[in-house]
Image (cartoon, helix red, strand yellow):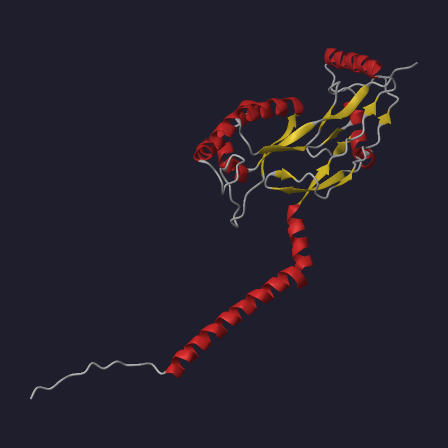
Length: 287
């Protein structure tokens, strides 16, 4: 007599299945509660704080340099004045994408961005002198030591307005981005060393270092202004918040010196000292 086998199936208890479903829905409910609470925190309780943080990230400021006062002779001839000049500054992070959005670049844009550091360095050498390799080191350093975007590398100071305009024209013509400027005026003495013992001079930071430039530095310097505005990756926001504090230029001085007579006296004195092989001399002018 043959034996028959019946297949046996293991069935889960109904109570166990219901428990798992209940646990699943409780877990989903907890996640939804956490998400809802976070949204409420962002949109309600902390909305103001997050809005202020976002606005602060958009805010930019720029110092507006005051012109140093002019020094005149008795006839109104300029003895010392400030002329516009610029610091040339590079934004290596922008140069790395040649001004495009790094997250949305076409193949053509990426190809041009790879050429940007070398092309810009060549233009800088043409107008500013120096070494192309040195410029490349600065232009290629797109990240700071902490991993953030490097948007400031000082390339040169006291670059004349004429040279800067020519340089930027060539950069624009080539479609190269990432070079900008900041005011860095230069002190100019039209008559060279005429009356230099009286006028004195300023140092590289436009601070009085000798003579009248030093003695009246506080009044000649003036007060810088400030401009604040909002900008995004694509530039200044047209309707964003902005403020402007105009700079107050330094005081100007008119001296009793007659620059023409001063030149005649200094020339005569120099010739007399050379002729006598003397170490120094003094000249007195009587009216």
